[in-house]
Image (tube, rainbow, N blue to C red; front, side):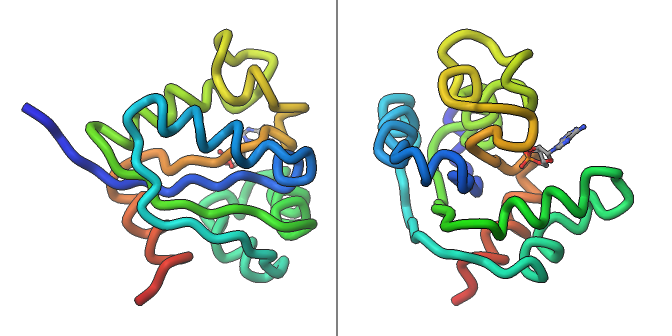
Length: 136
Ligand code: CMP
């Protein structure tokens, strides 16, 4: 039985800056994720703070918001079978040092902050995050 889901993916400033957009998109496409929508944007620190508000009590919150708003990002709606967990598997562990071989963060991540991509962690959060960037 298939379980088609949508999830939100962000290509972060470090990866956009190093021209990795097409490399990262091709990993999604090769692994049965369809890019339903995508756009390159540059968000404000306030928008980043709203997007990452689940992390507001964390010591890294300020730096995280400053970083996500530091340059252009690409936001995408990915769709496919078990898209939420498939995307998270393709991304690898949050800290590139701990990520498995051939995951996006192992291949391209520079540090726990500059870890190249973000992906929703649940179907529920995927809906919230997709709505944040792609309100109709
Ligand atoms: P992301 O999946 O975008 O979700 C929150 C981000 O916070 C995470 O990726 C990391 O880039 C960043 N971050 C920085 N420090 C930490 C930490 N100690 N634990 C988890 N995430 C961190």
